[in-house]
Length: 112
Image 1 (tube, rainbow, N blue to C red):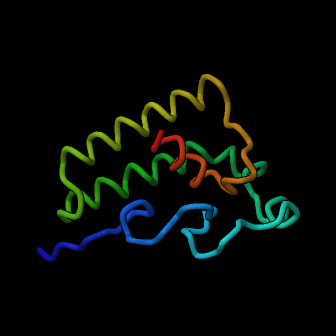
Image 2: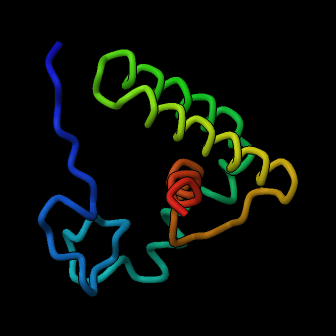
């Protein structure tokens, strides 16, 4: 099986100091406030959090099956997604326009 190396924002060699991490360090600054408001879909797609988490769980299971992530890492991510889901169920989904959509919000909560 062919293995791939997946670079994360933190370890791909780019200098993230002072940049907007949502944009992967590609720009010195993030988008203007008006652009964040126009692009943010979180007020609408937050109701799809269950589907987003289900998709993320399926994706990490596939990554483990293909040998791209270890079974242990996949189990840790899966458990983390369960924790995020429990938080959303108990407290609702916050509307963070800086994170733009439900997937980016869930990814950020998973990384906490």
